[in-house]
Length: 134
Image: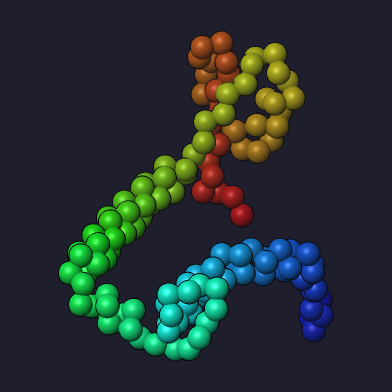
């Protein structure tokens, strides 16, 4: 990139990204907004009120279900953190196999840093180290 010259970001990926995040977050914002509605109706917003949160605080069954949801979310978050970390560490190398007579695949694997690891189950095996990629 030349000094002082900015590259333009293509419009389509930006629009797709904005639409994607709007699709994800607008329903959450609508639920949060209607949780402050004065009436039970989801068809119209009549005014702001905290009465539903007051009902939540004073209902032990709702507090128990909220606590259960928080516990489940904590366990799911911790499990995904551990699993994701293990998978990321496990993806340092990848094993690729191809038929011995598949010259095109063999050349592509070798051109991308594949290291031969012998021949097993009728296939040639190659390891590619993913940590060296820049």
